[in-house]
Image (cartoon, rainbow, N blue to C red; front, side, top):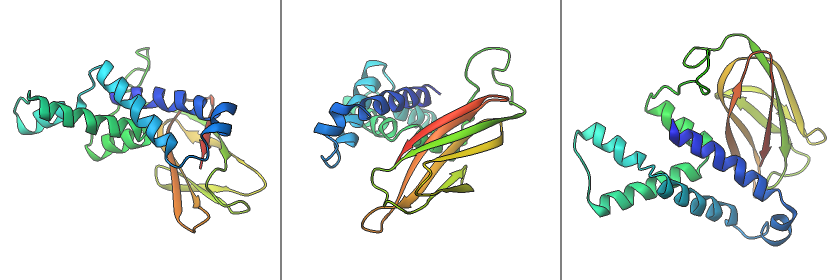
Length: 198
């Protein structure tokens, strides 16, 4: 759970940085700059908060205690790369390992399945995707619509409350399929806005 929280906070913080005028003017054209920044900041967070999650999981699976420096260093590196992949990557890790993600908050709804529906508005900014092409939108791998070239927003009403992996898929200039993923939470009777760059 702590891994997902760190990934979400880092993703939001980096989005703020990457949308600044300074970043767009000085660093946007540098290939791989965003990934490098994400990895460096993830490494700082993982080491600062001692998020050695990979080592902890291996110890549980193999019922052994790992304490050598080499194993710890490798584990920190793997954990850093997972966090740098963003909330979508961490969520997929939880799904594949069948780890239940508890509800956030600690209030009366903590640990209780949410019921009802809310709305989701997806605001899309083109970076690598070819202009004048549509972008496919899925929630938990289920197609929900397209974002067309002249309208960078898709509004979804009556989305069941819960956590979803939001994915936008399009094509870049070379024809390669590119995808951006984010974890979004829908709360009953509330509007959620997701800002995605692809």
